Length: 140
Figure 1: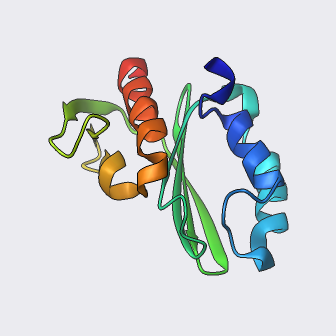
Figure 2 (figure 1 turned 90 degrees about the horizontal axis):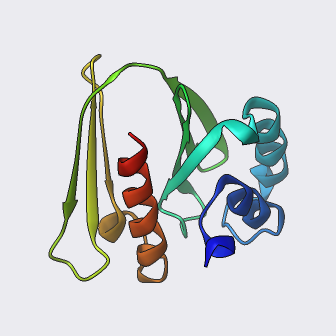
C-alpha cells in the first residue's frame, strides 16, 4: 500500500509521534534541526540502519543531488552531505530469506556505503527496508 511506503514524510511522522526510538534528551532538537536542514521535497528515499536502537542509528536521505548521512550516537548527532559521483552500484538478493537485499554503492572519492536490510534492522522492519533498497537501486 502506497501510504505505508517508507517515505521521508512517513519517517518524520514516526519521529514526531516518537515511534522511532531516539534518546528523548535529543529527540526534539534532532527533529527541529532535521526540518531546518533538509528540504522535504528533495528527499527521494530514506534508509535507516539500526531502526530500533535508541542510542545508535544511521539515517541516509537520498536527495536529487546528494545523499545526506545522519549519524546518531548516544546524545550526539551529525550530518554529512555526500556529493561525490556514484561510480558503481550493485544490488544482490541474499540467501537470508525472501526479503533479504544487499546494496553496495561506490563513489569516485573512494567512499563506499553498504545497505543490508537483514543485518541492519530487526525482523519486523526487514520487508520495509528491502523495498527501500530496491527503490534506491532503481533511482540510481
